[in-house]
Length: 393
Image (tube, rainbow, N blue to C red):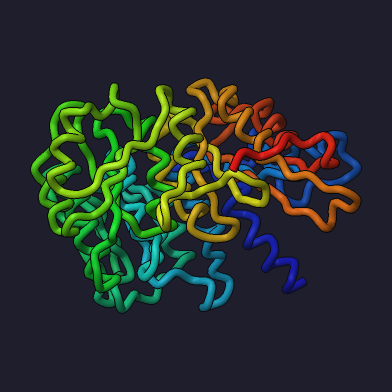
């Protein structure tokens, strides 16, 4: 019985992730019902299949990024035992997608703080309950803080906090970068510069920042904000990776960036293709380089940019993997489907001797349709080698 309670505790944060403000009701058919009886015709759907999970995918079924962040934090840190708790948690305003993306870097070593999302200066129930369940003990690298407050957000009682402040997302991104550098004892050798105006092109950076510790900084299409310039200068001639095409961050900006370090542009003309290009990219120690089977992948809707921050901890733990984007209607873009087939696992004789891909689907059925999840499941499936497409290293 004790084991059963533990397993239910691990499953519930992911399974019942409703709206961040009010949560799903017991009668909401979009969410699974724990302990559905097999005698009922609706038992498979009530338990959440195929919406919650398929054999190669798991869904974090939040109706908004606040709920998704709360569920992801508890999936990554089940907190059943003290060793499964994070040392610190990051709290950022879910309405400020720029700062939320930048804060994803705090999930990287040494702090390893998952992101929770607030609603301005209020703390939604989903975030409050997750923070209570996570019970962070305090991070030495964060000055003993249990909670890193980024910007003007709630201040929960009873927790030691470190506050990062700035008048706008550009200054907050600089403050986050400086804080991360101080925690790790050195600034990163690489930085990512993403669009401050086109979130769908910036989203994939959150997953990599959480995994690598390389910071996210922002530029407008034709101008480089002063806080971004100052932050990059503090890295002392880093490699600067610009994520997105020239229509998003122009050559005028890259010319300015070349005065601060070595500039490399990664990207494609559309958001989904841009995310795929970043997933494939590798340059020495920078980049995912996911061009073969055997990886974790995370999928989010490009119209919900804060979900990239909410999901970032999934890319920095477990099966580690890049963020890929669904279209605004929740469908699977052709470029993403082609990429999945390109890295589809295959086996010669025995599938148990192969490698496997797994996908995390972030958001409810409005953010990612069940049809898209079913197609992702099929494209991730290990198949006889004669049916698998060769990868392109």
